[in-house]
Length: 381
Image 1: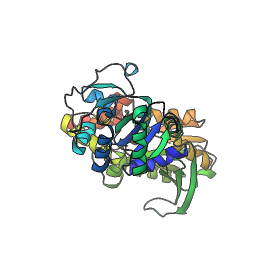
Image 2: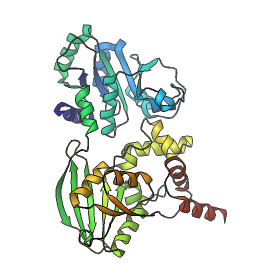
Image 3: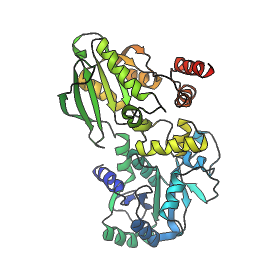
Image 4: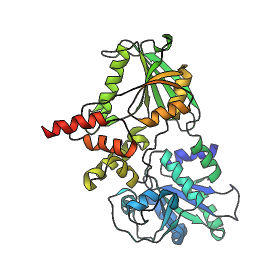
């Protein structure tokens, strides 16, 4: 798994990695893979020259459906990812548009992606990059040429098994890094505690308001996914910032609480992809979930397991959870926490966030009917 961890850094920098079934095997299929989002002209040209007949664009099935390459079949009938055959005429801008641009008709030759390539997408998704990759397939007759390429460009090798182990255990362990008292306006005492995922180095924050761990009562908690646009800039497209401040107010009024600020922007797709999804919503009229899926992501990429580990580290086992999301309640219960109560929490409806609220109700089962009803009444006046 060590090589797969190093591969995260290589891919982030736009450098290809060589994925094999076995690290030293020449007899089986392997692939040199690079993420589209960070790919450079130098590496694209080198990969094209290495084997242009075997060059593929690997995208997820949901992205292929958005491009109308795959039929809108039941999820269980679709491959996890598909490969599109490329020729040497594609440049970086065309590849990026094909991987994340607006919906378009497309009849490119395609087939289910190989397992190695599907695992590569899992690694790229973990980096919050667009889940699309260039794959140069290395058959046995190309192996010596690929070895020379790897030596020239100092290409890291790893295996599908190592990648799978890493992505399956991405936040399986966390470390408590540092902490300090941080005075906040209108909050009666706050202590910030930083946690870091050991495999991916993503950082998450626990904010303890008051002395919530010493009362013996259920601890009020909030699992809050980072939202730069809403939390910091008061975006009207969501009510995240309002939920953040209402949570802290609730804790102050109810003998304290624990606010978990999770590094899972845009339901786990990252800020760059969230902005791309906003563009798709504006251009095509997609709702928030369909826009994420059109980029190649799942409807929700978040993993609340890291939040559960943070609560366990803090010694929290009985909670009142501030949320409208049934998934957060389920995660807590599956983690062995006693959920004494669910406290509704939402902001003020406006014309910009009502489509978002409606999608969360209809597509994800969130308990936001009261907020939607309030907004609809305001619009009818």
